[in-house]
Image 1 (cartoon, rainbow, N blue to C red):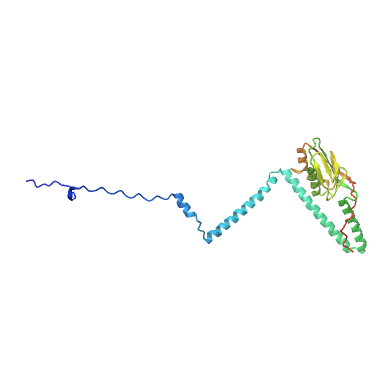
Image 2 (image 1 turned 120 degrees about the vertical axis):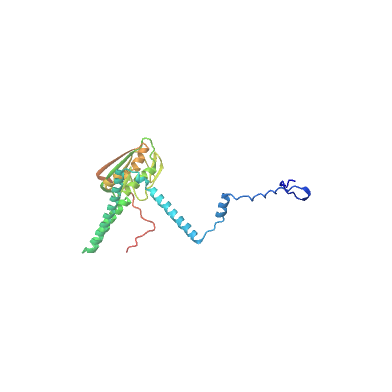
Length: 269
């Protein structure tokens, strides 16, 4: 009798086979990285320190933006040629010198008035001189002195009134003391109107060529018209011809009638 026993797999009672393992439940839906990022950012959870840092960064960015903008405003000067920069610097120096001279002149007048033995006579002389100067500015008296003559020819009729006004403004900024255009005296309230080729000064029609007679320092007046992008270049773009001539003896004799104010009266005794 063979005592070897063959291994047998045990079966549950009743002869039924073992049931297979039940399938595992499906895993929960995984959260994507974007969803985790959004969940961490919103709603925002700012601490007091983070809020202060954010305000400081905003202020720093605003300051940098303002600095960049102010720096870009100087791009025109940065792109200018060296000789143009020298000319502009000379013009600024000349204006500063004129202001210094005017200040010195007023100081001298005050000193003379204080030290004069006959203060009444000195005051009368200064009053007459001031009246003469105001008469020149108001256009009620003629003027004579060094200056320039600016002649603008306009064959194509493209020179507009605002271009002529720009020329007046540049001349005034350069120290012009008396100006007339085609026989019309230019004063503080002078205006230009009309259209290109049909220009009026203070309501009086003028025609090309436009001739500016200007009293002032020629060394200041001529460069002011020739600065880069200035009056001369603007007019030449419109096919106009510009001629500037210096002279030691310019006469401005177009006069304005003296106007008496309706309401204002002198407050001095």
